[in-house]
Length: 210
Image (cartoon, rainbow, N blue to C red; front, top):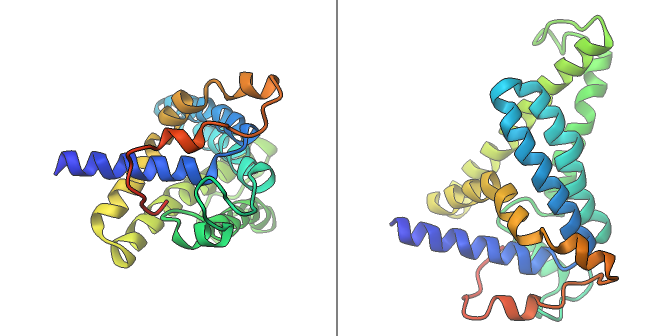
């Protein structure tokens, strides 16, 4: 069972890379995201709220900016798939789901500003520092909630193993992305905008859904 779980994790990671990380700019931003996420993981031990601020303001914004603004969205000749097909079969958060998640993230501090107690759920903020920390609490809940929501959702639309594999992938992505994309900034500085090796790296892996 462990061997099969690890194989499914490897396949999900590979599908995510080959379908959604062609751009060297996107890969470089994922490297930045990975480093900041690892810092956020360490800060989680000392100050979870600071960790949430790092995770959302640096890690998630850089990560999603790469997908939204720099990743090619035309026909994928490497994988012989349309962008629409890749969006339809994606296991985790496709761009449409990410828009919803990021909209909730962006709306949280606005609602908190208008409702200092967040409808009685939080201690009303009275200073800029209070506002920042209360916002961090909301973002921490949104981050954990987004992870658990999609994991449990996958239990029903796929199966329990797929959900658990995806959750494991998301939690460990910073470490995997660090190793996978650590050379991307250097390649980008050389003027390489698209990863030329994607059509070679997955030889021998069966196609699965990203």
